[in-house]
Length: 72
Ligand code: SF4
Image (tube, rainbow, N blue to C red; front, side, top):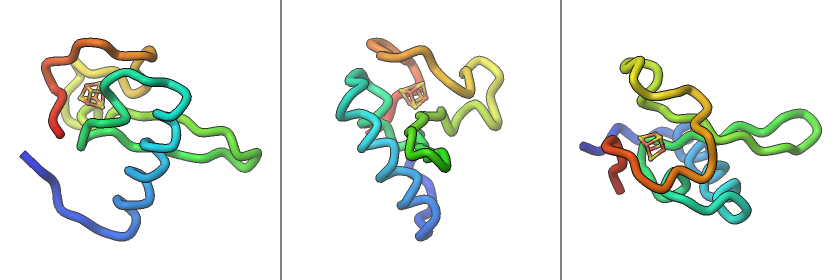
């Protein structure tokens, strides 16, 4: 199930993809991944599913190699 698109969402996904360059694993390829950038330029990867489903951690331990919530 894909989500709506918005400039903010696209930026968060792009940050997640950038974070994935060093993290590897599934999250950077997942439609639910979100990235945030600190004022110092550090990238953090969040799971967007965590907002509505407590089974998913807000900050998944990386790299995630198996996840039932993964979607491209
Ligand atoms: S649903 Fe799973 S693979 Fe997708 S961002 Fe969350 S933890 Fe990562």
